[in-house]
Length: 468
Image (cartoon, rainbow, N blue to C red; front, top):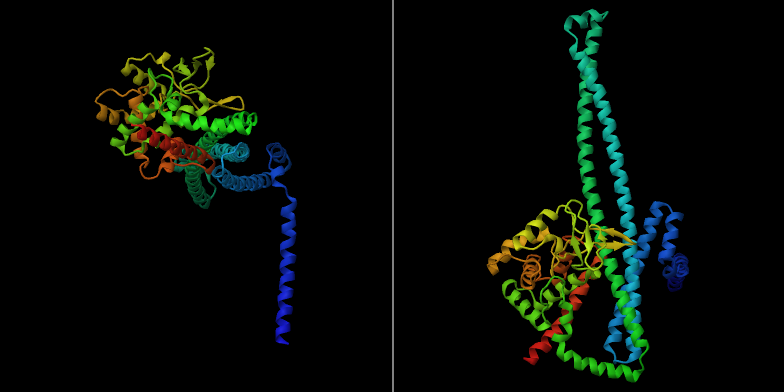
């Protein structure tokens, strides 16, 4: 009897679980996040949903793309470990394109979320400013009343009051006014402190947005390159692909020459071969302890961002406007006004013409310039950062540091990476190099790219060493 009753209880519990779980299961199954979270649908939702619901929707899509990206990365690694056939190569490239599309969607979502935060913060700043102004007006009125009362003599006060009690009432009222003055002053101080914090928060949100935009552009750039690669392989037969593999393996033996084009950096008199760059990186390793492959990966990543390194000249030292070297057209936001005095000092010390010395151009998003250009040489240091490292480089070389000199650029990057802990944690140091002390998970694309490049360089270095 007890046994039967126990089975009955278990059956009831099972039915209850099904009743609770199945509706939510079917609800999730019906919700096609792959379709719902496409960018065009996200744009529509912004006007259809309340601000709170829209933020929740963005977070849900963000979580979906993160999970899908992880799944695809596992699939890519599995495919690449299998036999090198044309079909596997094409499949792997398709997965990489799909993965990058997910990451591009992630970046779009975080940009939209940051836009909402920036909007909220700006509104809060405006509201606080109005509140401070209102309190100031109230304070002016109260101070005027207090001043008028203070100007009355004791006799005037006695004569103006019908009873002695009225005199004391006025004293109490005056004390209340003084108390209100102090309270308003305290409120103004508190609001000003809050306003300053909000402005700092706004600056941080804008910086996060700019960093995310940089990642977004990197992702789109890589996606376009992989699509070109896929188109190339789609035209090949299996026989042609196997021939390509054999030729590639042969070509890899001369990696020092193949990689040389990576170091064709604007502003450098003579670009080094891979072998020469490796020797420089080994020299820097002896001083800083930074792994050569990691240093080469950082410099490669920095020099390729936006494909616009060293493509601008500064022309207007007041506005920071410049020109594009190739076309002579106006280049907006070539250098931040705060960086210009330092840039002029650096070029003067080196005997360079500041108006014909190449620097990076600003980036663009949706056809509009954002951030500032002005980064110098192979290591892409902005003038204010370079100034901080001049004495450290001079202490090693004994000469005036030059951002456009390959040896100085390698050394500056090595010293900087050492201070960022690059000999202990390369990924963390790479992320600090890219976006400062804080970064979002969407910016980790940069760090992963650097580590991937470093792994490739490590193989090239091993081949180079074996040929010696």
